[in-house]
Every structure is written in C-alpha cells, then in structure tokens.
Image (cartoon, rainbow, N blue to C red; front, top):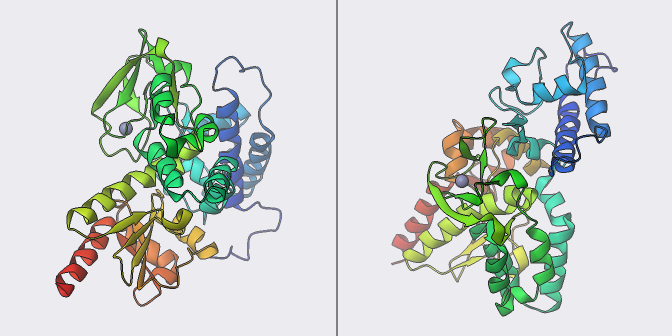
Length: 370
Ligand SMILES: [Zn+2]
C-alpha cells in the first residue's frame, strides 16, 4: 500500500521509524544485558527514532515521547495504546516491542533484520561460518546436527555442551557452536539454580517482582510447564537471541512435522542440501516446504514478496508452512498471508498452508498412491 498523497514529504514513514526504534531497543538490550553497563549512552537509532516519532506526532497533532526514557516506556505498551496512529506499519494493535523490560520477538522481526529476516539470517556471520565449514568438508550431516542441536537444546550446561561436542558431526563446527551459546544472563539464576521451561527448553526468567518466573519465548508450545533446573555454579549457556527467534522457533515446528511424516512411513529430510529448503518429503517427485514462525502474517507476506524461497527444480509441489503456534495465535493467519502475498495463493507454484493442512496433504498423497 502506498502512502496517502496528502502526507507531506517531511513526515517520516511509520514503518521505517518503527524499524529504527526496534533496532535501537535490540541494541540497547544487548548493551545492558550484563546490567553493569547502564551508564552507556543510548544507541543512535533510539535518538533518531525519538526525533522521527516527534515529527509524526507533530503531524498528527498529538503528544510525542518527551525523552528516550519515555520512548522506552512506549516500547512496553501495545501499539493500540500509543497516542500515534501507525498506518501501514505492518503491526497489530496488541503487539508491543518490549515485555517485562525485554525485547519481544515482534521487536526482533521489526528491527534487527531490517525486514528481510531470512536474508539477513543467511548473512549472519555464525550461520555463514557453519555453512562454509560443513560445505567445505562435504558434511551435510554436520550441518543438520548443528541445526538440530540449536532447536532441541536452547539451554545447555557447560558440561552438556562439552559432551555434545564430542560427537564427530558437531566437533567439525565446535567453535561456532560455542559462539552460538554465550553464558546465560545473570538474572536467570536465583537461589543457586537456573530454571528452564518444559515447553521449549529455554530459560525461565523472573518478572519485575522477582518472584514470578516466566518463559519469554512467545511461541513456546507449553510455557506453563517447568523443565529441569541446573545448578548455576555448573555454568549455564543459552542460545543467542536471534538464533532463538529464527532457528529454534521454526525449528520446533520443523522437527514436529518431520516426526509426524516419518510416523506414516514417508521419507523426509530436514534441511537437505545445506538448507536448500526446510523439509523435503517423498523420495520421488518430492514435496518441499519452508517452515515459518513469523508472528505477523502481514510482515511475513511483505518479506515473501521481497524474497520468495527458491523451489528446487525436481520438486513436484512447494509449500510455505506456518507452525501451529502462529496459526493459533493469529486469527485467519493463512488468509491474511495470502492476501499480503499473492504468490502463495492457490494455483501458484508455492502455496501457503498451516502445519495441519500440510500434514493432511501429505497423508492424502500417501492414500492416493497406496
Ligand atoms: Zn517455553
């Protein structure tokens, strides 16, 4: 959608302002992660976002945040409650940039990656290094082992990590694995232990009251279930934030789908040919799928319009598959996605479907062929 022609040129584009604000918040959260660095100046993007929001507010004749501190308070408020209207900004009214003082996945989608999440992820230095190393060694199994580790174990003790790196597939990328898992943040430890979530395997973190512990992964399939606790003294490591959002979250759906397909006796490959796609199903005339865990179908639609996944030539059918968590969290997700991106509507080379619809389609082909 283009901007109404009545908007003067000096009024900034809300979508760009939000991307700057989100990236400023991510930067700020990173710099203050160890809680000792609170005297640092605010990241430049926060100041720029403040200036631009002020222009927007002026144009809309409403109040702007008076300072960066107030701007960060806006970050913790749903967009619906902002005094500003954010037209065409690809956000939903109930979304916010911060929750309990930490950046949300929405903030990550909007900010760190300037809209082209998967593109930027491929350019991510760590992922690039793993790809280069495993390709040079012609070791696709190492690449798959790396992806699987990240998805299945967002949190590991230092000892667990050492044990896993003894596996020859992972040993090939040991340096990168260690970089993927920095130390867990200090606030995760209390009473000498670090708590984990039984739903996603991630950390439980304290809310502001320091008594309530919560899973901060908003696509967690079962955030209420407690997982194992680890003695803090053992040294607990946690997967880096952008890898949690863009590898682990969709990865949970990828593994779940692969398991369901294997259980009906159909061959399935995860991340084949060094990530040519997420899943390749059936040995002959394969069906390929790219699994997405984006929170917002409009934002995903925009990203797909900019960069559609490349369908391997031998694929009979190709799908964009949306994980159940996302489909459940958003009304009419698939419909909204297809509206935002005509290239994934029925009749096109790539079709957008839910996880459930994809599994039904696979079972349908099995029945037809048996
Ligand atoms: Zn969880």
